[in-house]
Length: 87
Image (cartoon, rainbow, N blue to C red; front, side, top):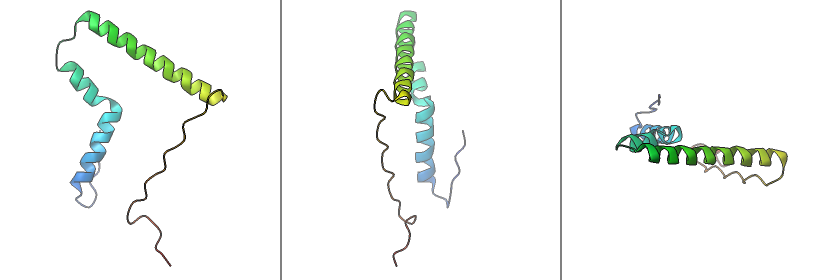
């Protein structure tokens, strides 16, 4: 995983890195590996993960087919410096 530091802004690069790691599931994996997991707990977790994935796929399919409404996209925040100058 690679994050570029722009203008020596390490804080922003750290935020980007944390967001990427969160998306990839690194933190969840670290927490899961920090302690022993019994085989029965592992089966329960994997089954729950499979159900969650199946529901997500079904929900996406229903949205594509128009059976349920897709979530409204969140408006992107306007960052300072990226807005057009006032005339």
